[in-house]
Length: 429
Image (cartoon, rainbow, N blue to C red):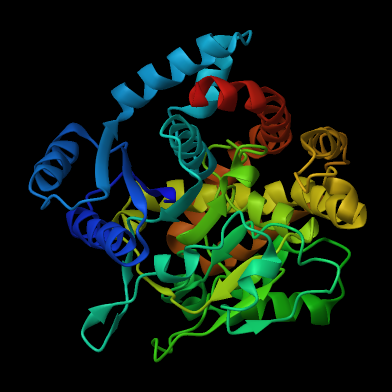
């Protein structure tokens, strides 16, 4: 029996999502015979967390489903015990990287990875609180249907059951390491207002996440595809392909990883940085590890907090930090792609030492490209006027700090990757 971790990190009210997630857990247990550890990592305020506790207490018990609802107090206690048991130095630094005071998309999932290890799970299946399941014929379309049972097994075993395959003949011996789909609905990054205000400015801003030396036509294609997921067409029937999954075709709100991936490499713990949790998608792709790409896309929506007077500048800062992070990540992605099979050891496991090497190299890059990015954002936002121009004033005051953070975030990530094996071992034992 597969023991899986179906996980929802949240920092907002999402009672309906909790109920829907429990229904997916029940589906996995009843239709696939899985032992489901339903993990809710709750960083909400006390009032919201109390409501979540009430919802969880009211969930109908299902055989094969165990629900864990942990607030930050419980998470912090678990992390401190794990770090101390691992015998690692600088406990406070690691605790800060695993549970920072600011929003971190990577850190919340890293906590899920460690807890999945502690719960003895074979895979982790992540969902988001600002998304919902599609309906087809009146029934919810659960992604877990395609995420089980092939994770961790040689791709050759999946070829008979997965309808389509386009794997290179050299790859079937490698394990299926990922299963995922994307989303339909609103853009994954809440910048649709920029596109409505000025298409040209939208192109200028979104193109900044491409490498600086890309030709204009390639940037234009990237802008057209960016943050759009699977578009808006609803689910009409299943499609699944065994392949090396393109990171642009899946989303972290709709993903599952085999333990051999997340127990080797964590996610970047950068704070206030959109997209910092997508790193493992690139690792799996560049190492040519097989995955299952399916079409049970999740519905994405935006919560209104991001557009309030306080939420707007905070969210825009996360977007700008994402743009700045790409100077470093593009270097790492290029190095991983060039390394190819060299990213894996003889047992098809990712070599963490190579990842650390590439991360440390990226901290020595010339900042000129990121200075250029900040200049372009400043010009674009001032052209939009209003609260965008006000944010540009804030950005101007933070330029040096943002440049420093983009670099130090990579140093922190390298440090965490080095500590990760000991943390996983301590969690599992």
